Amino acid sequence: MAACHRACRMISYAACLEGADVVRLFDRRISARREPGYVFDKACVLNYNHMSFGGGPLEVGTEEEAEKLMSQNEKDSANAPPKLVYNNFVLRLAREILVAVASGWDKHVDIINKITPQNWKDEPVARILELCILHIAMAEMKSKGTPHKIVINEAVDLAKRFCDGGAPRVINGCLRTFVKDHMNIDTSQPAPAESKA
Image 1 (cartoon, one colour):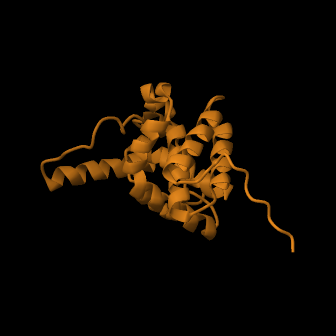
Image 2: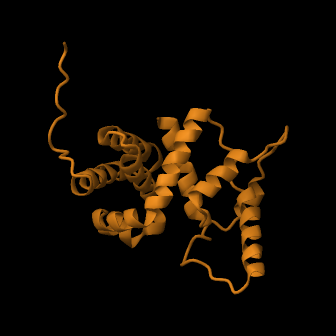
């Protein structure tokens, strides 16, 4: 499960940076071909505009302009990190979660806006990774029905590995609030003990 969450985190983060759809980006990364002897071009990545996700959606007047923008997006994505390499089960599960992330994005943005601390709202660009972790966790609980304790633990573990010192505690609190207020599950009660027959 941890590998699946890492793949989802990586793709969600990259999609936010690129302003791309998470599922299309995932599919593109999975099918990316690397030739033998491939060398990652660091200079090319440094020229990539990592802030291209800023602002509202782009509007174009013609199909030609839209194609030009899509073509540029494809070129920029070629400079992104290398192909995902995971087993088929992990890839299938990650794609299912990313589909849920994409379909629940707008609703989860509203919820996240209500449950995150003000300082995260004041600096959303600095909190992209943390917000991606929240989106992934919420989507997994809602769509896959994964027990909330497992999802919260995975989210907190991701935050411990990839975010600053206070993020794990905030993510834990936000997800517990989400479970209590939006999934009608009481998180204060201990899990019932399993009977041993």
